[in-house]
Image (cartoon, rainbow, N blue to C red; front, side, top):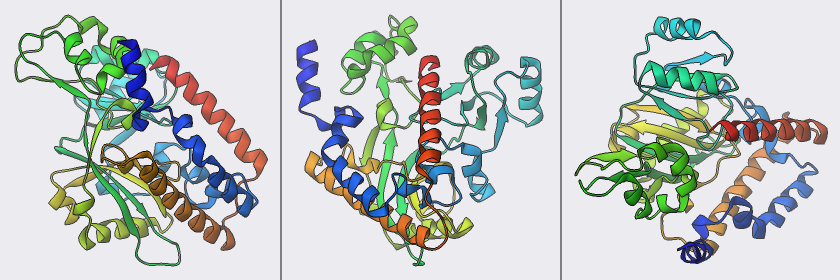
Length: 347
């Protein structure tokens, strides 16, 4: 079984580790650094987000720059706040179970949780070592990602990717245990260590026929979510929605919007949607996954986005937004990665 999984991973580029996937095109990234005379050329891409949104930025600064009516109700909790005060703060803000919690500075769905009762909240608060967010659980049925970039000297931008997300889930048949359902799942079976960590105490449970059991509520590729490519849905109406968002603060030029909406048509009409997150220049064009691309087509799409990122960053640099110094960027990146390694230990 292990040998079979090894070869399945070897011949499916979508399952390769991050560095193994990106290493062959790394010299292109280095070339942009050399042309810019800066290791951190991307830091000027989104001038009002720390490090251009490459890594380590807080969610609060992102939410504060988006239209208030399009972001979920959100409060921020210090990890060392006494729990009685946490309860009061959450109650005063009008939250009721269930709601979402996640680190203010986080990535890849690390420590993202759905909290359904006080016991789970106590456990989360006692465990998390950093400031975190309490946020409304958005009940819109459709979750999508929209990759958008706009050159600063142009009014109109490009919707370069549009996908719908299906969270990692199994469906009960009334006979199989949760463990068996996971072992037979095309993606979850590659994540058995993670699944055992999260759901091991439920592995022997028989999932009733027709019941959906969510293995993760994070809509990330690295958390096992399945993507449905909606490139045929990209049209002028959709572009207009994101052009308007890009111009809201005038400084969001490159990144990916993660959104929940009532329907694709409503999103195109600019109504009934909420922005869960805006991911800046560190965002991966995740529409390369689950759409039948071979690795060379995926590389071509990634390189197309890197070229746009370089051009946007260079323009902003020439017009008053300096690149971060090597020392500043190195120190920030070192601290950010130390932070994420710590979070992984608590996930």
